[in-house]
Image 1: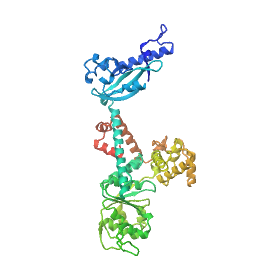
Image 2: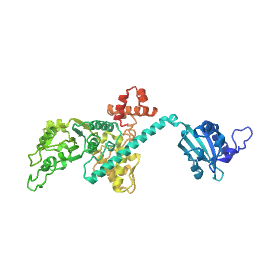
Image 3: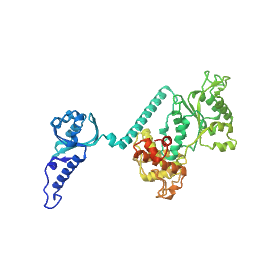
Image 4: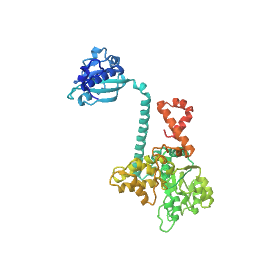
Length: 514
């Protein structure tokens, strides 16, 4: 915003009996003068400086700040350079650049103020001076809701930065020292849908326990990410995180892999002992992925190890104690396998202490835009390319697919589409082509019937045809967020407005990850 000095000082000619000037210059002058008078009367204070930075005028509202600035009178204020009497002012920058500073925070001995600084220019654009306007005095009171909101955002940002720095430090230390550490935290499990929030709430509670955790869910839903996050949030976070995919190890090697090998246990064995995964996980967490693929012959030994907290290495008579918390995961129906006699019932109950069902992607469709953004950034980093950009049509197409492979399938589709595209933009036609090439006939989104990529659900009655618990959780989250915004984050006021206790409010905030 630029104000002409001539417009302030010279009234425009008017036609007799008419309110507005008839020429453009006159209208501009009237508007500038009216705005100047309005700012002078409505603001908390105003002053003018000339092009050298010398204060030449101050209004009555600004005079009340002078004692706090250490100035005895208006006479002692006028004629001084602005930096001499107003500490921390940025008025000089406005004079030098001719660019306005519309909103800024100024803090000095007089307090904290929300201010604007506007240049005064002649018809040729030369800077003649500047106007300083105090919009709000004591903003910590008048702007409390806004300041509280930004304070919460800043706190969350600081916490995220500290967590990222800690993760980076742990990863670097593990890489240089060969340590086994968790690679992911709960922030790595992307999603804010009711289903995602609930599974993270259950996982956080499980992290505070030492009991075995059983992660159940389809392939590609993020079970391994949650296993890492549970370890990272537990009291064992400083200990090792050892993962083993049972389905990827030949059955003949599983016993040695789990329990270790004594020197010379069999022909060709090394002369020094080899620790198994249980011993390596001592003091930390042992993650047993695809536990449903464990052969029956090894299930009994695993059960004994979990019950007794001790193992016997292959070819050894020595008992080795260990202290490892077990997190298991499977995409199979373990309960049905127990009924079919394919999985030991006693081992099932030993593992099935803290079961957590990880929802498939089709139950958390509103998380797809966020997942696409995270997966796209990871794809860009790994391939040194710009992140893919998807329009609303492409996101709507992704949101209605079945995703039998869940997030792993979504990642594959995005990567294939990015490799086929000549630019960063991915449209719905290209994504549909990639899906067909993978043997999947893409579903077509219907206006008003498909799930919204913004998480609001369908636009008609079909939106109510969802689990009632999800709808109640979604409505509750919206009410709490609205109350937090209305009361500036004041928990007591929010609890009173919602008619719940503070304890219940804190519980809900933890569940919603707010």
